[in-house]
Image 1 (cartoon, rainbow, N blue to C red):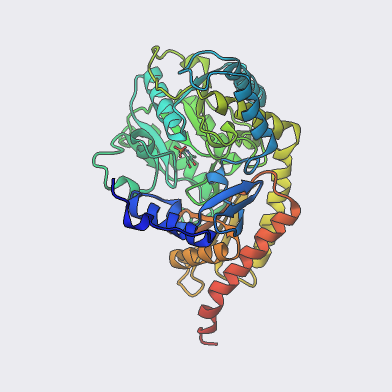
Image 2 (tube, rainbow, N blue to C red; image 1 turned 90 degrees about the horizontal axis):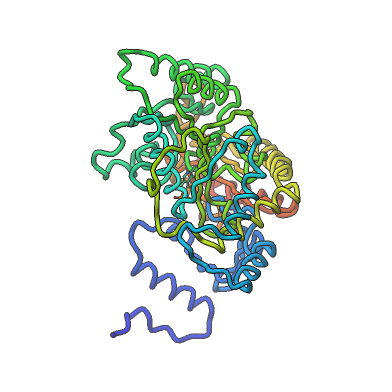
Length: 465
Ligand SMILES: Cc1ncc(COP(=O)(O)O)c(C=O)c1O
């Protein structure tokens, strides 16, 4: 085998070696790679909220594996669960056979669920990605109702496989895939800052609910009776857009009255992230189906579907798959769920998140590029806008995607990892671990506001007085 020319790096200098790794990966990896483009770093070690690159540089990680690392990197509770499981000689892969680890994980998971849901729930272990659990949710409700259509929302993100992509909002990722989403009815998600009805606030959310209700009841509305409605309580990839509790309760009432199963996708909001163990708890709604992944595996891949037992009439093998018995992930997941509950990290997420949002809102006065600050718990979004653009009827300024990308890069230079999301990729998203200390929260905000000031100062300086 001939060596790839860029392989030929012989050096003890860690920065040179890191550069070589980046060059090799850039040359060989798919052009669809994502985060690797925004963050040209080579993580070599990580502990808690800190990642250390192969070149020795350290970063505070506010991306946390897209919300996966509830306890940060390599938390002792997680690494101890890995060691204990390996030392026990347990099989690491068993398809979906019953194991002590699966039994224990199920017990730990059900203990976290609202009892009104848990008391009548079944769990299905899916292939280890949120998107597979979304596929399972669609299939489950289609099987149970004998219908096909789905109700889904603007701004939604549910994954990248065919069904999940169909219910996702982003046009850019759907456009190249012909024929996707034929059976999906897109409904307006309440988005205060960029209200689909141009009014915002409670009124905007009320209009959304009224529209949903009237559309599905309209015999000429073009919507055949749907198999389910799927929604996120806080849209994550959609730009950290929280739905009002009253709106969620109306969605629950509308769907219950029409016997439409309600699927709540808690892949990103689950396990304490929003300041409640499950985001549905804020509004008190009890869904028919909940989709879970990311943090429930305690850093390792795991995805499950939990649903009301009444829907449990799909056939054996209806949603099978090889990797549905990841023993290590079940052990780290159970340990993580219990740790979050025992240490009150959910309440901590609510308190620190509120403080961070308050400081960011205060920063708006000095940084007009901040259009909106929103979120719930430690799921925070800072929507960046063009302060010199023309405001819409509600005063919202145009999104600022280029500037947002520059801010992300400026954050990285300052040792802070933040990702973008939302419409036009203009929202800076903060997803720190629930274990973030007050000091780390301050440092995150200092670095972010410093990056915002550095990126915007030259532009504003050029502005006529
Ligand atoms: C709400 C939501 N659903 C589903 C998914 C898909 O999960 P995965 O990337 O593990 O397939 C994501 C991923 O970010 C998500 O945020």
